[in-house]
Length: 231
Image (cartoon, rainbow, N blue to C red; front, side, top):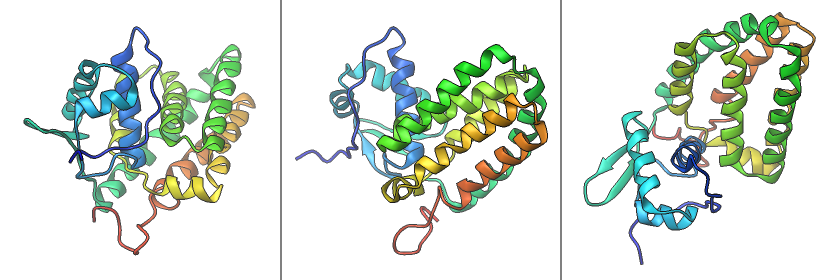
């Protein structure tokens, strides 16, 4: 029996950018809590789960290690970096300072022709939520929010927000999904897009603010025994 940790992962369709695809899937698995903090994962084991070779797994994990999401364990694999409750509070505070005003500023800059693609992303989010696919949901969630922020034209903002999102751990998503509430959270993105299409920048700012606040309420709930994850 292997000593390495495992998590449920669907085989990936091979693409030219397979390393980035793997990296995004691993990042989402870490953020969602599907890959547990403190657990050690081996590249060969993950490669079998994803249906790819070990090389893109190692390359993706090394990049995630540079971002602080995992720690390289020589001759063993990669350990998921724990995040404390205080870490989550600080990350969420920073996101609240950055993202709502940035999306408010971006709202009048998002062209009408971009709305159908953004709406398709919202529909993808809801579909993943309805299916209970947390890893795919978080990847689509990140894609949507970063797409909105891209219209600010501020590349550094995108890099910072992407990094902050990676430092988050959303252990409550599994319970939300099991209770059937994740779909309602996914539909918040549709409300944001409706306000964007109506050019109601103030409402967009409020909706994004409320959405991010869920990180410290519904999406990062304490564990079943009442203790905070990795506190």
